[in-house]
Picture 1 (tube, rainbow, N blue to C red):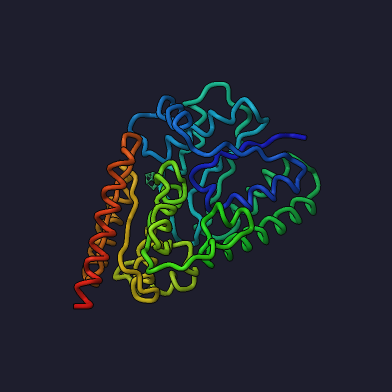
Picture 2: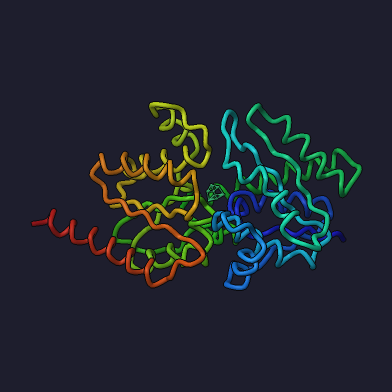
Length: 320
Ligand code: SF4
C-alpha cells in the first residue's frame, strides 16, 4: 500500500479530513507528521530560507519529519481557494521551496489548486492526483465525493465551537460553564497549532473564557459582512479575519479580540492594521500578539494575563 505523507502544518487545519479520506479511498495509507515540537521547528528553521515566516518554517520541519517514512509527500500548490480571491503567494511557491530546501525527498505531489476562475483546476488536480493511485475515473470521483462529505462534517463541528483537534476526533467543544467569550483570530495554522500558539485556546478556556474563532462563523455570514467593506478584500484569509472580528463583536458579544500574527507576515501586517482600526472604533479591547521561533512562552502569558485582567477590570467599572 503506497504511503502518502501529509505535514501537520499550514492548511492541514482546513483540509486534512478531505485529503485523508481522498487518499484512503484510493487505497493509500496516510501518514501524518507528529504534533509540532522543538525538534520539528528547529529542523524547519535549519532548512528553510531565513526570511520565511514562522508557519513556512514549521511546514518544512514537518516535511523533514515525514520524508523518510513515505512514498509520496503531499505539498499542493495553492493559489486560490475561493472564486475571485487569492491566498498568500508563499503558498504558490511552497512545493518549490520544499523541493529546493530539503534533500532526499520522496515524490512530491504538487498539484495546483486555483479556484479563482472556478472549479476547472480542482477537477484537473483531483484527476491528476487520483491517477497516481488508480486508473478508474469512477473510483476517483467517488473518493472525492466521500472526502468532501467528510470535510463538511468537520466544518460543521468547528461551527459548533470545536477546535480542529476536537473536530478531527468527531467531538464538539468540551462542555463547560464559561463566564464570557473572547474572539481569537489569525491564520488557522497559528491559532490551532498548540506549540506555535503556546496553547492559547487551552489557556483561555482554563480561565473560564469561551474562545470563538473565525472558523466558528458560517461562510454566508462572513460573505455578507465582507460585501459591506469599502473595497473588496481579495485575500481569502484577510477577508475571513476582518469579517469574523466584526461578526464576533456585533453578534456574539465578545468582550475582546486577540489577533495572533506571525512575525514577518506581510498579509498580517496589512490586515492587522485594518482590523485594529475597525475594532477600536467599536470600543472593544484588542490585543495583537506576534509570534516567531524566538518567542518565549512567559512573554505571551504575561500579555494574555494583562489583557484578561483589563477585560475583567472594565467589567467591574461598568457595574459601579
Ligand atoms: S499569510 Fe503570512 S503567515 Fe501565512 S504563509 Fe503567508 S506570510 Fe506566512
